[in-house]
Length: 121
Image (cartoon, rainbow, N blue to C red; front, side):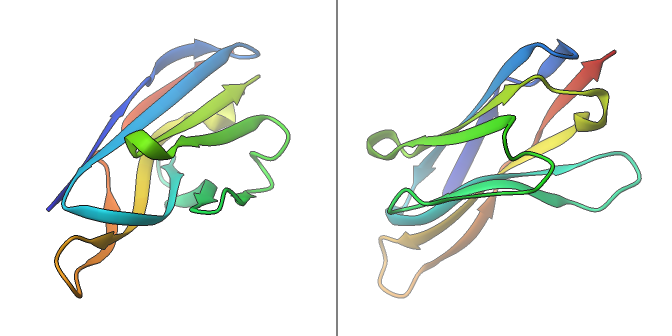
């Protein structure tokens, strides 16, 4: 079993800064990819950014150039630095993990509970 604990959500002023954190724990042998998705009211969940085991990153167009994803592999922790967020970035941000489990043949996808980020204009 795997747990993802997110932190860092809250109210932020447009143009400010915010950092989200997500720590993974549990029966993890290795992590293939970690990342962030978000879901705004009335919209579908969408990719924000992911980071692979080797360090390569992938960003949604809406996040590229403003948000930065990073990882502390030793701690199974992923971060999302949000620079100059805008009201349209208001959403519940979900941590995502694709992992290999300790038990042979186990692993897969895991999701956090989500953390709300509200950007005020």
